[in-house]
Image (cartoon, rainbow, N blue to C red; front, side, top):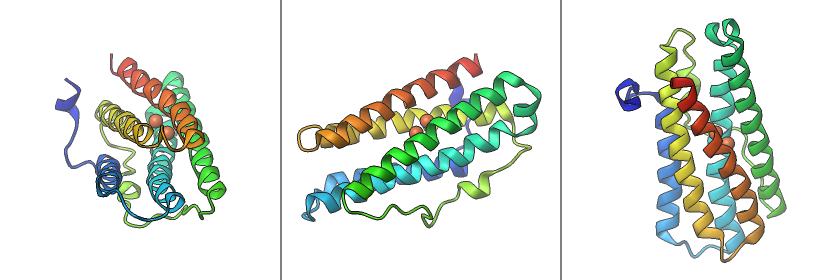
Length: 175
Ligand SMILES: [Fe+2]
Ligand SMILES: [Fe+2]
């Protein structure tokens, strides 16, 4: 049902899909790089996903319908706050591992997707699809790290729980 509302050409969804597939390619390649470098590279894809979600949900919280309907505006502000919390958690872990979190990732299309006039229900359906994709993405990362890196795994499990809640919230908004 939701799929019928989702434009396959949405730039936010394209960013999420591209980041997820870059992580999948990285996981499949099983790089011979040192463990910390491999972890940092994977966590950078997570950081970028979180950044585009902060943009998207903040935009929706202050869009016309977000301001007109208190529940909708509040819901998206809460989600943006969660994504900002995730951004910080992932960036901190990158820092702990000796990396430098990149807050200006290149090649993103989401900035071009900030369309206040877009069909709002269609955007919520796109968010649902993105959150479901992010849940699968974090599940893949947890499976990858659970035997070798308990600290990263514990952080990812906290984030995954929030992402599952986000997907449920989007389903509730569509209902
Ligand atoms: Fe998130
Ligand atoms: Fe989310």
